[in-house]
Image (cartoon, rainbow, N blue to C red; front, side):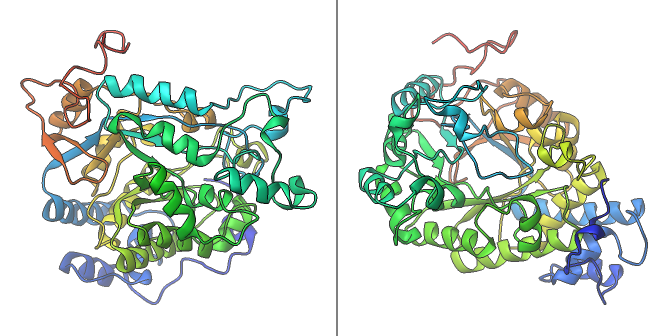
Length: 453
């Protein structure tokens, strides 16, 4: 798949004293799996190289059965919009091509770039227009713009640091062509019209408290008062620091990610959790990641869904530097979904991302243990800029057609899964759960253009 992972000298390796058959029995019987069990299942046995196709099918079958027992035959999706505020970032993650160097955004920069920064007013207008079309949720995940601060108080604290650009990654908004506003202003802008606001990853929360002695609880509490409803558990990548040291050394470490998520739960925010796999990590890292997510859910009970994200490699620094040559294989994708279902016995919902997998493979994941098929998203920039090829939006009609074709029941959901509406496959329509939703289709069907208001 890529350069040998052994070249990185990882201490965590996929070697166990467990057997595949014992691990499979435990999964079949519904016992809580140990890390060694997960490694045996996700590799189809560590006694042989490669994935055994017959063993893989046995794992998938058990995972699909567990899915049916846990959540039934519905396949859910949400009517949502992605509104990413800025691509300006200088964290330097090697898996990412969403960012643009923040230096390019400065008013005195000579070089041009293809990135963007939106003002709070622009964000509000985008969400208001989407709300009229019936969305339930706006998701916002952005670059770490140096002028982004939590609020005016935070601006003052950051500006007081000596050599703030180097010590706390801060420059004042006046240094840039476009002022992103503060995090609180963006939260207030995007929480308009009663739409559910899903934003502020642990990495963004760290950026919103950098240079201060504020706790994550205080930061998430202020964000919640400004309109934040739930937190996306991205920026997790692989929750093992020896992997993070390779792919994202400038990001918060595993403990920092977990502390931020614990704080979000403490102030009463729901959250999701993710894994981004298929780059330099090995099978043991993937299962250790699942263990940390399961422990977080044991502690908080706040994780509404788990989202495996298969690494899209073509335009990323990892590929450009020859560190990886491809992402995960289809077999690895299917086993990642299946073992997520079996290992995360305390998380009900496992998502299949059609943006990452494509339609055909995304549907296959729904028979490997997944029960959610993402959202309409209306705009998707992160995967596209990394080289993704599977589209940026999805209509309700398409969802109904695809989900019913595999014999499952399509259902519109809220972000937190507390509202679920089964859709009549003989009379599909548009969203109905959003604050302004009335069943009008999101798209006109023929051209994927927005439906007339």
